[in-house]
Picture 1 (cartoon, rainbow, N blue to C red):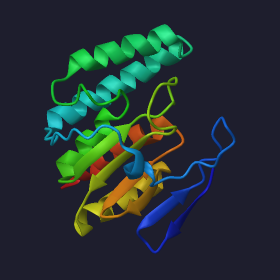
Picture 2 (picture 1 turned 135 degrees about the vertical axis):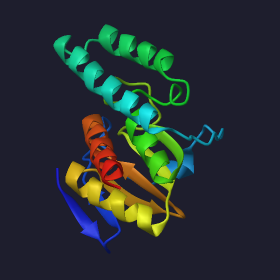
Picture 3 (picture 1 turned 30 degrees about the vertical axis):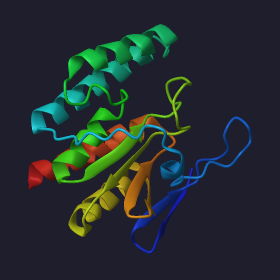
Picture 4 (picture 1 turned 120 degrees about the vertical axis):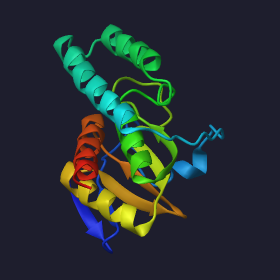
Length: 181
C-alpha cells in the first residue's frame, strides 16, 4: 500500500477495492453518517494509557486465538465494561480518539471498519475530527510515520487506514509527543 502527500496537509492512501470491487473513497463518510448523536469526549492521560494498554494486550490475546469470532466478541464486551468515557467507541479506536482529545481536537465520528469482522458502518478504520493548525502539524507527522491516511473534508479532517493496528501505532506516536511537551 502506498501513500502520497498532497499540499503538505493530506496523506492519501490507496485502500484498494472493497468486496464488491468498488474503489474505497476516503473522506466521504460525512455524507453518510447515520449516527447524529454527538458527545464531546474529554479524556485524561490515564484514560489514554488504559486504552493503549487494553488494546495492546487484547490484540495479543486475539492473535493467540487466531482472531476467532469468540475472542473478538470477548474483547468487544470487555472494552465496553473497561472504560466510562470511551466505552461506546469501537474497540481499537479508543486510543486514537483519546489522544486526539488530549491534543485538543474535537472528534466527530469513528469506526474500526471491518478489520475485526463485518457489521460496521465503514470498510476501514477512520476517525473524523476538527483541529487547529498547531494540532494538525503533530497529527500529520504521526500519520506519516504510522502510514495512516489523512484528508480534509469540508471543515474537518479524517484519519483512515487499511489496518486497525496502524491507528494504535499512531496513538502511541502522539502519546510520545504529549509526553515530550
